[in-house]
Image (cartoon, rainbow, N blue to C red; front, side, top):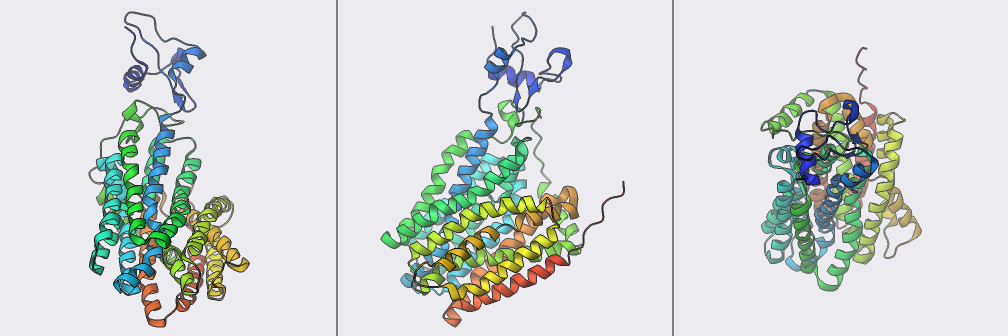
Length: 467
């Protein structure tokens, strides 16, 4: 009796020395792995392009996993489009101060950052599929429960705690884990595409949610975000797999590797690496600059740009559309920044990025107007190119300084990014309550970016190891 293709591939791949072709050579070609068709009592491996073509999957399952991950990140990112749109409606309906609303957003951002370093450990221990399904459910629960809230503390529980933990579990660790497990070839391409998923979600949901808020109120917009997260859950549960070995395949472009036993001490190692890195000066400089990065992007522009523009008479839909355009250009800026990082000193690139960002923020109060005009469009394009351009050089400096522990160190540096974002999300709202405008917030953020530029320049290069 002839075995099924899937069964044969799985059984033969797991057998030591399996999938060997004539002369003992591996029968792995490029990204595809094929095995022989063994008949009971029949001949050995069959050869020929026709046999390989029949047995090889036309689309490697890794690309299905990447597609599901892309859609999942978009669904999870839907909530990130919401807080800036709801500050004014919640203030008007409930009388909550902008500081109170900003505190809820800051709790969300802080938990997002503090959860991220442990997300990879959770996925190692319980599996990608389970962690992501729970995370999406938490985002949906928080967004949906907010429809019935009547007190500010409920906003902090629903938006801050539930959504913060959920989105933090789908931070960069999610895409990094998927890329590392499922791909050997095309890792750079997949990383870039999955990074763009967050921007794509912003591009889709910001104008949509702005229109819903303007036409129907904030509650339907919150329900829309909850449904966006819930719709993705069945796709994750049915199509996501934790490891290529679960479907009897090698990673794309690699060779078959058995699924490792879950590591129970991964979370402890994450904390130990933090303590080791915290004893070095470069860690604090990297964490400090990235905290300012988060303060001047997620905490400032993403949270307060729309209400600030609305203060100057600009419709919410127009301001949200401008914010969505930033999401388009940040993909271009990040890719170009990666190209530059391969060729130039990462410290100097960071200094230039932060200096230019700070300069642009100093001019922003003068650009605010009831209508969209060319100088504002120029700011949006420029700021979009600079939005996450800091990520490639920051990751490069982490690799240079901390070697094989760099991924976890970067996770903690990312946590500082979100803590900085959380601080400005709260303090920006307080400043608006106290001063009656956001002008002071823009000026202070410009000064912070100038400080980050100086901090980047004093990071010491690590001497190369002796040959």
